[in-house]
Picture 1 (cartoon, rainbow, N blue to C red):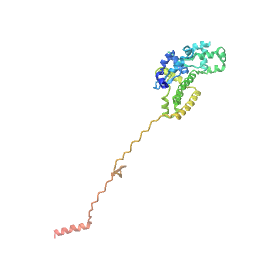
Picture 2: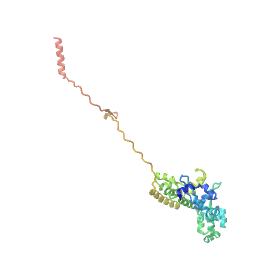
Picture 3: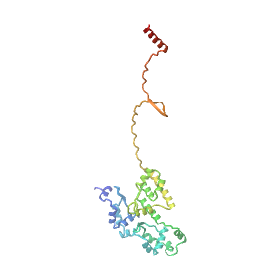
Length: 324
């Protein structure tokens, strides 16, 4: 009896794109993306390099869970400040103070038409916070003095807590050491990254795996600038923590797979130098050295020199012979 191999099964049941998977799971695209970030839906890398996809077996697993699809929608439901305050039974101002103090961590954000950041929180976590007996004094009583001092000092941990959640999601997406290092580097200023990763070839390789910004819009749009500010660590202790993590991640990546470097070109074959005549200096003219090309010396023509007295005697003798 023929058996079906896993490869053949995958060919028969190909993986789905995120949009198609969202329809199969009866989710809006935003709900699907949040479910993936929270680990409710597992994805696999696209073999063609086109991003993440969802296997058919994962679709079947999620659909077989009890209470599908309402239970899944409830797990990924995100609420704003007003709805979150209503779930807690507190004012919107008190809810905002909880978020600024880091007692509630946002799960996502977006920009409204006024380009203001709107933070969203998991409804399930808001209900859990309100149901905890330890938090009962915060819901109705006066804010403790230590927390009031932090608020007066301007503390706001919403962006930092979102970054912590975001990098956790990125690290869960891959086991590749360079991808994980790029996830940490994405939360640091480029100057900080250059101080940790000094090799330009390693930095270029690291940038190849840099994750995309979660905010829509063109790279130079106002929304992109706001998203970049939210994604960049600001507090000194957070920066130091990320720098340490990046140094460790880069060391691991170097060990497992060094960054590629350009192959040096072979040197061209040496060509013989042209034969030139030796040049020797003769002297200087007005401070400029002159030279001549050495040539084969010509034979010196031998001439017989006649002493002056002998020449005189020969001439007088000739005159005497002409005038006896």
